Image (cartoon, rainbow, N blue to C red; front, side):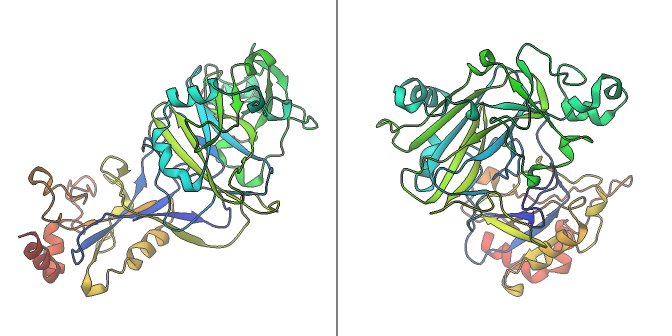
Length: 416
């Protein structure tokens, strides 16, 4: 299983690179497992797009998992609303002229998101009858959130924060391009009060500024909701065009859940090129008082079955947080009741700046694994502990053999 460590005091995903996970692969009963505290989950390069807010299954990172990040074993909705109650989604705006799709589906129909291609979703949109265009009123229009605007030209040139915030075609977003109508007044019906849980360091030192698009620019977007007998699981499709290159800024819009099946579990499936994400939404019988959750203390793990972080998606080489003998790799086997609590606590104790993940993988692959992958186990035995170039023996097979001979012998017998 795969579990996400969430800081409950914000009910919001931690800033990028501040998530923690645990993963356990499917394996034969009795096979020994190894829990690994991971230093840092490495995101994909910045010129990609992702859901920025609210929380999402990817942890608000660019995810290439198709059809999307796995459903948590324990229900962990990112949004809760009542019938017809709106909520906001924010998405990053790199790659101009590319298309975002947000598809509303009942949780009972999640298996069908595997069919969501741009061609299928365009066909749903293009086949929509006139009555399906329920989002044509101005309050449903998208608008832009700029984190670089308030720096101004004079301040942005010398500010690394400004450039890291916007990452656009210019150093700062001056809001006078042809695509913009101007600043969006806070008393406008289009303006939505941004939830406090959406705020993060990625908003820049001065926070975000709402900028309205022109009507001509908004004509690129299409939002429809209706029943289509060819795609009966789809409740709505929202198609938005990325207008300008501001890779670290965001567009936002209001959404609702048609909820044809009544109250219950729903999801919004994000599709952008080869990237996918899922926002889990609970539709309540009546209006929700807190759409995105409420403050709590401490952290908790959120488990997802049958996955692990692959090599190359986490950083280990040279990280001080790996250099803790006996505190990086933890065996899980009948001798300790397959208890991973020591591993998870070690991750929590180091803090999210030093530990963001834990994998649980077979110490040896089961005998059914094909020969050319038989020894391909996701254990970072080559962790570099500094200039010496020596591996961290905590995860080294020789260390494990010396410290846990019964465990290693058991695995050897099972493999044979």
